[in-house]
Image (cartoon, rainbow, N blue to C red; front, side, top):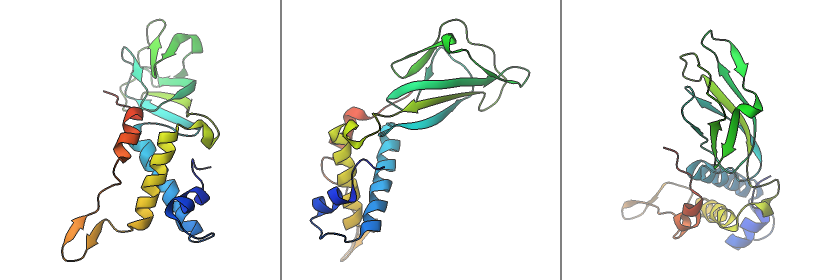
Amino acid sequence: MPVISTDELREHLNLPADQDEALLAAKIAAAEKHLESFTGQAFLTQARTVMFGGFSSRLDLPVSPVESVVSVKYFDIAGVEETLAADSYLLNDNALYPTTRWPCTARLGAAVSVSLIAGYGDEPADVPAPLCEAVKQLAAHWYENREAVFVGNSAQAIALPLGLFDLIEPYRRRVF
C-alpha cells in the first residue's frame, strides 16, 4: 500500500478520473522508494535486514523509525552462525548497544545481520504529512516531466519542485 493514492495524485495534478492509473501508481511507487532511500526512513511498516562487518561500540541502524529488533545474528570466529539473546543488546535512538561485551566475529564483510521492523505504522495516515506531501510532489514532477532533460532551444536539466528538500530535511537520517 502506498502512502498516497492515485486519486490523491490525480487531484493534485488536476487530472480527470481514471486517467493514467497505472502510470500514476508507478510514479508514486518510485517516488516513495526514492524518498525512503534518500531520507533513510521507512514510511510504512516493513521488515528490513541490515548487515555489518562486525560489532563496534554500537551498531547504528541506517533506517528509522525502528519499531523493534527481530533478531541479531552473527558468524562466530569458527564461522558458525549464532543468534544473540535479546537481553544482550539495547535499542536506543536507532542504535544497538551491548548490555555486556559483544562476541567476537569471523572476518567477513557481513558478519553481523540485524533483522528489524521499521516504519511509522501500517496506515498512510501514520506517516508524517510532510513526507506524504513530498511523495506527492515528486510523483507529480516525474509525471509532468518524463525525461531527465528539457530539449528546446538548448538542453537543460529539469529542477526538482521548490520546497521538496525543505519537506524531507527534518526526517533525513545520517549515519556516520
